[in-house]
Length: 579
Ligand SMILES: Nc1ncnc2c1ncn2[C@@H]1O[C@H](COP(=O)(O)OP(=O)(O)OP(=O)(O)O)[C@@H](O)[C@H]1O
Image (cartoon, rainbow, N blue to C red; front, side, top):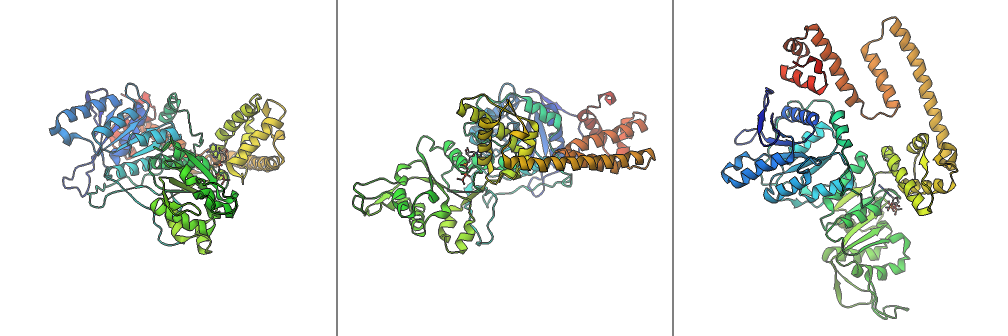
């Protein structure tokens, strides 16, 4: 690993063997430039990517990488010194990762950049993609995912074609978000051998991650779209919005009622080049069937009884902007035919009109229904379905992402207080627990309504379980009962273990199993991340004791190389063993 603190290269003593890139004419390892001012994270990532067969050059700040790239720019014969991919943090002193990515994209448009950020919100995703970044990784991320992303970036070719998501059959329709980027087929790919691929799921280290999260939020990050969510599922949604906002492509948003389909559609519009034009949202289920055509396409004077003047439809009103067609599954069959024509050539006739009208409208459709099923039942045109289903964006139900509930609930309590012009009430932690275990059949909308209800109805400043509406109170009984049974099981198990311990019969695996079980019951989600360093710390300390502090001998005992042991001592903060 090579490290640059400013513009001065520093070569480390690392002797980790570099694995060459396979199947490349020059058989050279791909080079990754890693930019992060967090030393711990840099070490872990460098270690990981070197293990994955890459040559890693580390920079403590973007400015240093910028200087080197600028040198390369000035002297074109040194272009061979360019990396294959850059991985950079956003928040750094002097030059931030977004400005750096923007500059790199302007001067080296073929060089893929992956951006890491501790701010896993929509604004960060959008900003990253707007600078031309290949991908963005919200922290903490899984190290294996990071390696996979870097591999993809290395094989990435910038002359992207948009892959239309065409479905093979009605029964085989992916519900995943479809990537809009595909690699050009005629370009050389760089598969990389991955000797340590079998490593277990790993995440960015906690210390590095929490340091990153302590950094102040960027000033630009005021979440103008109002979409809240930290869960992995919402990160996928943010990533998709970031990628799709700038494209005119049709998007089909699916998800249960109240999951935020309209909010996402509006975010796609707000972050698109159409943002200064109109965004019109229409709910197909809310308009009487016989009025839908004139609502959408307008009508000529005298087209039907009551049509006393010529009237523009929503398509004309949204020209240059975005038309959001909610509950598209409820659109009458005859209107579907007309919509298909607009999607095909941007033209339509007003009701009773003879002259075609041409418009430039981006369509975003949404449904809570199973459109494939409607196609099978003959209620929805198959060709229209294919047209709309170019990119599908599924929104997860709230009950599958309880980790998003505290932030959403607090946001809605703040909003409700403003709406009601009253003092903001605080939700007691047990109330949040009950909310997190509730089903939320009406999804985020239901949570929003409950918060409004609590703002009006709860008596004190702090909302307690007794203040909850009946459906949640019933749920709270079940939640508390469940907690009690867990804790009594814990007591029994603990007593059993205590007697085992007294008899000296408890194995370390048993102790670990109990610890894991209770951590999970307490709601922990990253137990491998917590346990792995502890596991390594115990073995490392034992080996060093056994070897009388001799590091090479201790490394042998552990089956590690001496450099790995040195690095681990640093990572695990075992400084007393440092020479
Ligand atoms: N992730 C989120 N962050 C903040 N607010 C949200 C989020 N998701 C949904 N909401 C809020 O929940 C309410 C319902 O959202 P929205 O109307 O977009 O849902 P929908 O899926 O379109 O519902 P329907 O299918 O019933 O039309 C809105 O007030 C919206 O602002």
